[in-house]
Length: 131
Image 1 (cartoon, rainbow, N blue to C red):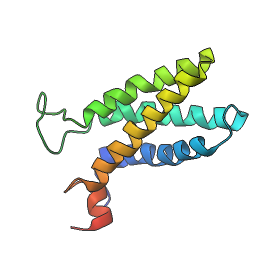
Image 2: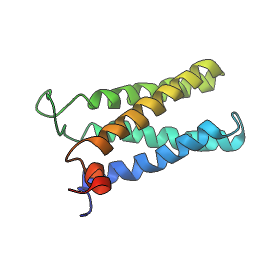
Image 3: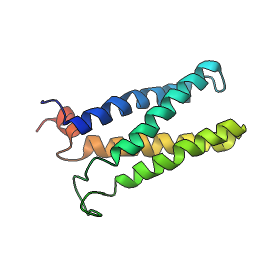
């Protein structure tokens, strides 16, 4: 399998560690210094990923302006959820922070990742399942 295109490679370089850190954060002791530190790294990676994925063109389905597809809605959700979760944590709104973080991981990592792995012709689909 060939190395992914540069835009995809950069996206993978941010989302793969974010997915692993996010899973760790769900299992870690909430509020600990380590949780907060890893949470900051996770938020930075997810924020960068949200913006970066807007540069990736849609590969299938209807397009807006010849570029944006339905999957870009998850990028917008991620771009909105990262600062929402951050502000909730800063305010001490644990319930709001938890809710935003679950939305972020489910939408930005699990759902978007499922499309990336299962989407015919997409790099991860080819990597995992071959041509």
